[in-house]
Image (tube, rainbow, N blue to C red; front, side, top):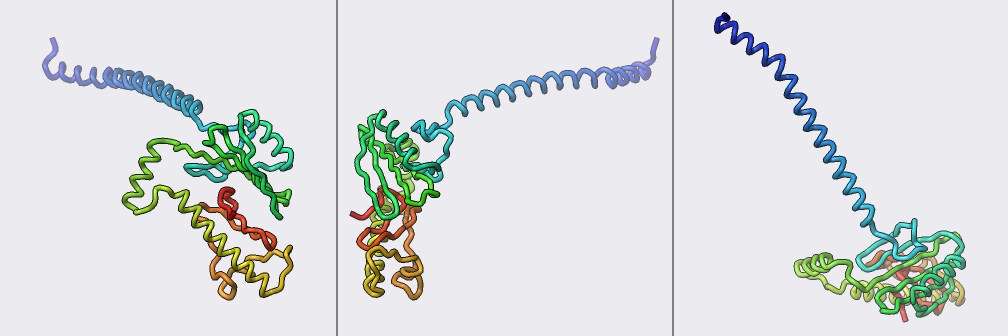
Amino acid sequence: MTNPDQRAWTLRLHSRLVLPRVIPMWMRQLSWRMCGWVLAGSLLVGIVSYALRPQPPFSFLRGHQPVRTDEHFNNYDLFGESAALSRTIESELTGLRFKRIIEKPWSKGRKVEYRSADESTQVFLVSEMDQARPLSIWIRSSRERSSLSRMTRDFLSVFTFTSRHGCCSSLNACIANMKQIEGAQATWAIENRRRTNEVPNDADLFGPQAYIRVKPQCPEGGSYTCGNQGEHPHCSVPWHELE
């Protein structure tokens, strides 16, 4: 017979020897299951994300990421021979029932516009005479990308007192900038008796002692370039242009 003290001591010893073996085993089983669930969930999320990743709208853009993106447009730069790239792009667009709308050459390059059959998508090819420069491709869509983005924009316009038609206001502001630059270029040519094929530098038009104190900035991030006398200034955003 064992006395109560010996029985209590035996129970304490048994708990110290058995319970540490039982609890870690249970915890190990649970941890392995949790790891399996986490790995399976991560794999599922990865597969779904890969399947739903944004795809370039055209095959000639595969492997290229946009250098600029907005709610209504994406801008890509493709390096290579501009003529060969343009032929490849035109061939694919023609197969997709895009129509060539207009081609505008100027002293430093050319711009070609294509438009889809339903007129919801425009594709602009902008090339420069400098062969080291990339072929700039602008894809502009008139469709809203999502109802959420439209609702967010409308909500913010109420509280910030901005126009819902930001693209139109940006276009008007850019045209006003180009008119100002055009006037400064014409004044520079008259005062300095410049020939028609001479192009001013930025220092000739902009600065504290020049015709425009600070060079204007395009609201959509475009850059301005002056051409020969008689040519309108150009904005790198292709649908921003003076008529």
